[in-house]
Length: 251
Image (tube, rainbow, N blue to C red):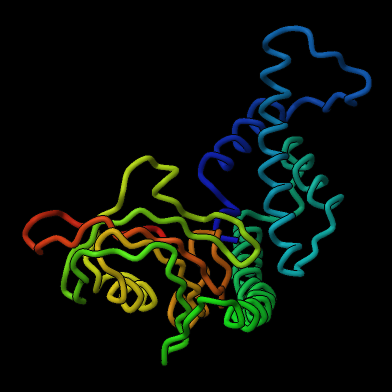
């Protein structure tokens, strides 16, 4: 739950408490939003509520369940200046909760991703045209190139799209509208191995087991632990090391 206590949300909560601590909240059904100031007040509460709801949803995916009515009660008590917990106690509880959620996400989401990835790899390996290397990397030639193949020390320019096994896109140079340039020895092992199989002008599809990707790490809130990753990659150019600065793709 690394986004649980973002500074912006904390600032919003602090503003809400300061502005409203002496006021009783309106029942929604009894208050029509008319003036700009009323709408601003409601928007502040709505923004904080949406942020908390998203984090509760994330926690529940990791099988950490909190009583949402108590979450609401805690917010209302804070707005009224009637906190039942000290700041020190609340900080400790939230830090403990954050650690618990991170561990649960690793266990629950990691186990799910590992099972889905293994099943996907097994089926994909049966498809015509798919080849499997000794490391377990799977690749399919979509278009064969006729230029140079890179070595591990080279810098390459590529267009690519990365997805999870469920088809969800987590990174794409196509969406950004420009190719990516990076040293081949500074990316995940599946990329380092796979691109050396390609020639300039080629387009391949790689299925990369988690041990050749990010292993049991969760990346950017988009890639669960133990995820099998799928990349469609076009090798546009193999550059000399001195030709270009590197920018590593967010795989």
